[in-house]
Amino acid sequence: MDFLVLFLLYLALVLLGFVMICVGSKTHYLQGLISRGAQIFSYIIPECLQRAMLRVLHYLFHTRNYTFVILHLILQGVVYTEYTWEIFGLCQQLEFSLYYLFLPYLLLIVNLVFFTLSCVTDPGTITKANELLFLQVYEFDEVMFPKNVRCPTCDLRKPARSKHCSVCNRCVHRFDHHCVWVNNCVGAWNTRYFLSYLLTLTASAATMAVVSTVFLVRLVVMSDVYLQTYVDDLGHLQVVDTVFLVQYLFLTFPRIVFLVGFVVVLSLLLGGYLCFCLYLAAINQTANEWRRGSRAWCQHCPHMARPPAAEPQAYRNIHSHGLWSNLREIFLPATARYERKKK
Ligand SMILES: [Zn+2]
Ligand SMILES: [Zn+2]
Image 1 (tube, rainbow, N blue to C red):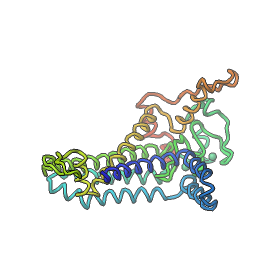
Image 2 (spheres, rainbow, N blue to C red; image 1 turned 90 degrees about the vertical axis):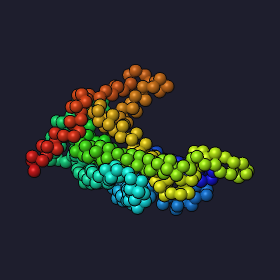
Image 3 (cartoon, rainbow, N blue to C red; image 1 turned 90 degrees about the horizontal axis):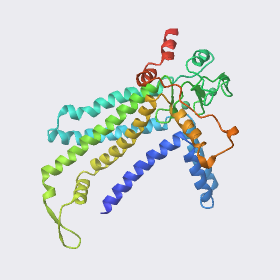
Image 4 (tube, rainbow, N blue to C red; image 1 turned 45 degrees about the horizontal axis):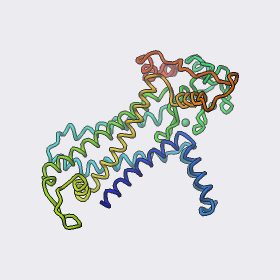
């Protein structure tokens, strides 16, 4: 049973790692958590170590750097090496269809193209030259985006739906979020690449999870191991059950079982995040607006009630014009076409 605990611990760690990175990259929670933890353990952890930890976190999440881009490529490289090295050959021996086996590679190529595009495409940086053009694109709602507001850092008028990214130190049009995995902001001009990247990454993880799981199941069925019996620690004869089967597979193909665990957790996390992004795309809302909107909604909670005069105006999404129009806006941004013509 020890191995099962170990494997579950590994899955929990993978899950926790991804959640921590996602939370840390989008909010200040992680840093707050660490500094609060550091406060508690300040008697044990030397001050210089605490400062170093905060410096590392600041570097990772609040400056532009390639750490997560490299980590992303390493993880992808490790998963695909294991797939090529072990699973591909074994599946061929079990006469899996070649179309089926090559699908993860096809998805990898498409994914790397969109990954590169998400990294290098200008998300819609607002400059003195294009400021006026961007000011005309979206209506000001006077709640979340009031008219005549200047960015104190860039000294530019803020177009509706734009935001200053503190990591990149620039104002970005239709700002969604800053993504550490692509080391770039996601904005008006690269949301389409980011969504395609997310879609192909989820698809490649899910395909790999399906291929490896089908391989393991077929192996168990062919070997008839589930029809056999074994003698347990107390000397009793036992029929093979699921736990025994997982243990058997783990001892026979440890790397494949670890890979299956990793890609299954990854597919679920990415799938969930992709659904959220597609939902926002469908209703024409950015992650930034969604976050600020839900915070505004929270201010209306009864337990936080305040006098009516001080009540802020409720946020209402005025930019949605139907599903197809919303998707066209993301996949064919009008200002990008205008910029291209100008060049
Ligand atoms: Zn700015
Ligand atoms: Zn940014």
